[in-house]
Length: 606
Image 1 (cartoon, rainbow, N blue to C red):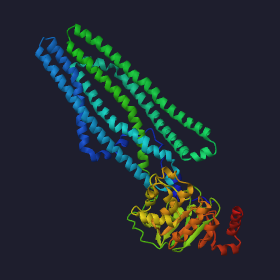
Image 2 (cartoon, rainbow, N blue to C red; image 1 turned 90 degrees about the vertical axis):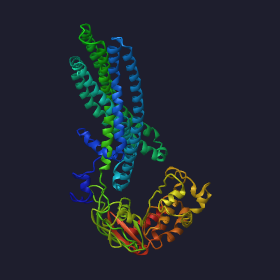
Image 3 (spheres, rainbow, N blue to C red; image 1 turned 180 degrees about the horizontal axis):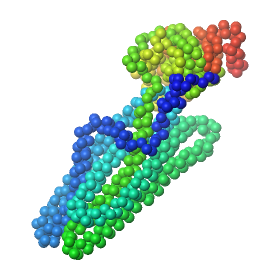
Image 4 (tube, one colour; image 1 turned 135 degrees about the vertical axis):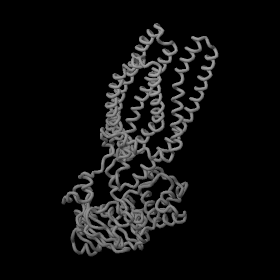
């Protein structure tokens, strides 16, 4: 196979500087502020409530700071001075401050949750919409479990920040700054004595920041591995059980969980050293203040009330540091998650409608491939393919596995764009028309009929939401599926469950045929669509194919002789090239590649 030229087509996206970035490949030196700036626009629709929430947070912080100051006034001007009126007034103010703080705290908590949940809904919705807009190649490269992890675990990590974390940041940040200011205002000498332990605290926080950043990023990567493993094994449970590989799956699951546990234990070890260390420094700071401040009280250089207030504010000095340090765990987890989320959102779709591209008008269905070459990576799998398919013609693509048949069908459906050459429908280059207008006139029936959770009617209307029950029943009747649908307890309203697990493989495929018929496409692609149908069902499908394909252009990838022989033309694909083409009788008479394949199929079917 030939190697595509450097810088040519998608190969340059895979190999060159413009490589699609793995959202899990997070660089530790990335500036978090840039990540959070990207999150800010999601708060813009809720700006008024966000501002009100911040104002309430300020009120909560102020009422929290009022306690030690009120205690100082009560001691120095009430108890020590023997003034009961002052003492009563301070008690009343203390109670009022508590009530105001409680009310402000309630509404702040409610509003921060209200805003946070809506921001996360918008973020999750935009992420899902963007994933749906990414080309098939992206989803084939990215494990499904990893994509699910972006929408679940990573969004949940952001949830912890925007709901609880933001509140903690503002309230504790203001409390810390307020405590520092009040301590300096009360007695700057005593405050500087309390701040003497700050260098040690700053050093410990710096080390904690570096270690926890690395640990939490590692944790996000490992949880994505767990999700990927779960998705693969649960979706492939029939294969796992069919080959008796449950023990191997269990061992692999234990391995990825062990990696996840070890990543989490690193965060536990880092936190286990840091947070008790902060407690120790707080105790040392308090002891220093008790000794130095106590001596000044004995020397009558400081009042008892100021000393009590000072110790109280010293607590509000260290407590916010601990809270903010704990928030740093949430912060790092959210940064890692946001980097992955925005990594997906910043992944540009490789396959989009050209700017200002017109809609594809109603087509007859003539398909033309001109010099088409294509590869998924470095190597081409299709080489300079020329092919004309007349409107209304049924063409069967045959050839050995890996010859490029399905790739040709994907290019015609514009699930990929060719690296070289053009694909045209009724003379329109598919890259020059809008993608939705093409897909609206296209129907695809894959090898395995995929059904979504919901009723049979829901799955059939997936192709045309406005279809009536009569339309659905007519389509079911044409593919021979009406009898089995009517035999179900709820008929069209029967819940097929996730992936159609309530139905057999043949029944799912019959419904896929009916779904394609409901869409009434001008261009139909059947990719090994009869491979999972039993012989009895196949006869029903064969009877319906004439109706299904009438007046439509059809590209059929099939190995079954009956399906191939019904085609108007057979195209033999080999090593990414069109080896020969013609009717069944013509190709058999030539005695070439098709004749050899057909003989092999006959012997296998005998």
